[in-house]
Image (cartoon, rainbow, N blue to C red; front, side):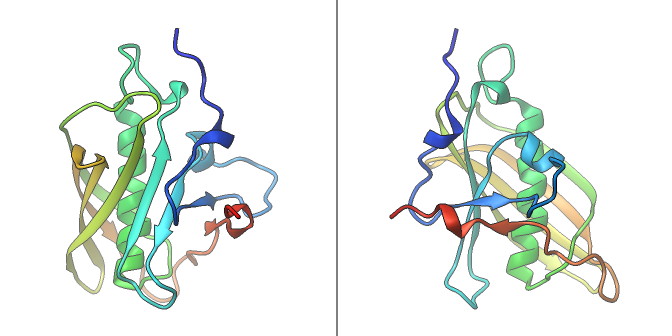
Length: 169
């Protein structure tokens, strides 16, 4: 049996901050329920980088001991909408309208997984993004996503934020 990891000991690499999806709300949303997720952004005022990461915990794994495909798909979806939206300069919620996944390699308990997005194309109403999940240099998953860019103000992208109170000293 694999001993459980303590999320307090995730030890994210330098620059990663916990994503606070709740922002003081009493209920726990799906995004927080799957596990503690972290993000790293480029310099303030730039849109040149967005990396999401997490430490693989036992509850995220399948019976074979590898990172569950559903967890990888969830994180890839978030990387595509949050990361792609950040790179495109969009500060609103982007609902996913289509997504495909290719599972390339497994991850195991204790691995640090990172997700990055690259914008393929942006139209007035759609954002096309490729997403990659990796452990080190090894790719675990490749995904392709199409997200809707809402007209007007849309739903403000403001519920999730990086928790700067937990920065290491």
